[in-house]
Image (cartoon, rainbow, N blue to C red; front, top):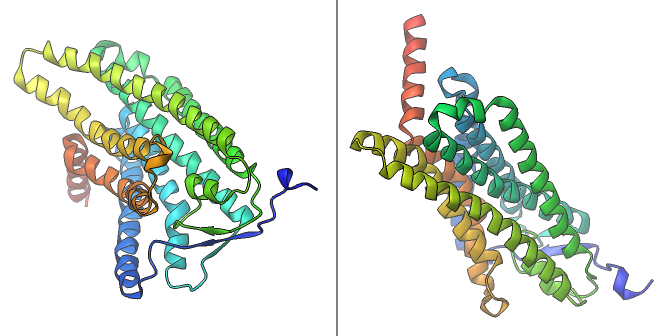
Length: 312
């Protein structure tokens, strides 16, 4: 079989974040705490919305899916990274690398599309409040969610196929802490131009569409808020969007920096730092942002706890 259609590499060696033993101990503790907060925070959000009837609305239905996505794509990377911290040789099988990249891409892409669906939900709630219940009914929410996850699986399939269709016949050391597209492309012994072009095109097209939905939604929201006469009404309308806007800024800013920058600006150290933020910090921050900045969630939790205390 020719080199063009066969991958000779059976496993990859992951370099990790650092080889400094002292720094490894500090980072291990820090990342373990971050991952535990991610698990507790996102699980708490999902359980809270599931249990409390006051939060049974489309907005929190999508927030549940956002928390699920955060938890999943952090889990695809974090446990393996923590396990490998003190291993001399950090190995991952070829198929393990394929699966890690695929499922990371699934849930990262899903998060991208969920944020767009949440922006549309906010647009309907603020710009068409009288029709909100009719437009954002249960069937519409389920259909949007199905589209989001189908889009995530399809996007991930394209990314993973374009990466692993390439021949890997030489070095197998991934200069990263998980299997990601840029460091894998750097190891291929074939021409990566077509794969890179397809991946860039998919990220640009779907990313542009998602950003367009978000920008268009918030443009209408902005002008609608300006027409609200009372300052209390404007504040209430804006407060329902502020948490989502902050999550969007964190996620899309990192994604575009990671995957839409020129190849000439690629830096391994910079890439690792941004990837830590992307894979660990954002999944931890999203539930914190929604809990601390969303008055409705805090009030619903307080009311639920008060009812429990009264009943007991």
